Image 1: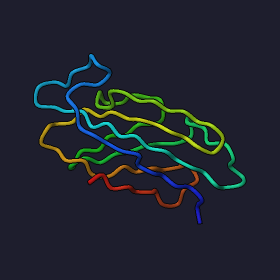
Image 2: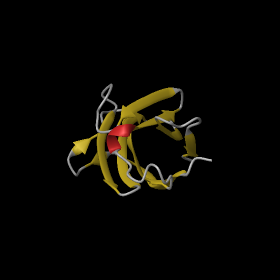
Image 3: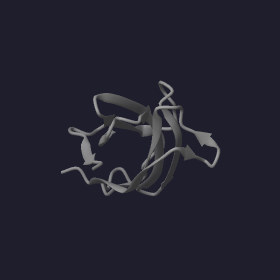
Image 4: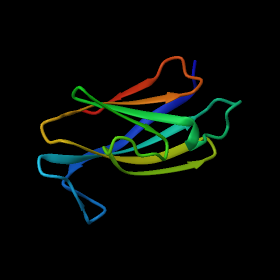
Length: 119
């Protein structure tokens, strides 16, 4: 069994991130804080470059290789790796009518991704 766990520390909706970046009219930010812990002995160090995060919100998919911005939707992120632990924060700009769905964590040697529901 894979010894990877992903824990959602918290998430919230906001109109402004960073104290200065306001969402476009009709949009809002979803900010998700999470941690990933790797207990596999042969993979003691989790490299942020190695993992991918994907969220599904409504029927819209947002995809982010670590430390990249794609599609203009991922507006802010923070990633920090130490030993077998990665902590991160992602902020997505989404239409106000959309509801959060899943945060999906995939590792290159994963068979099945881990899914965590955002209620």
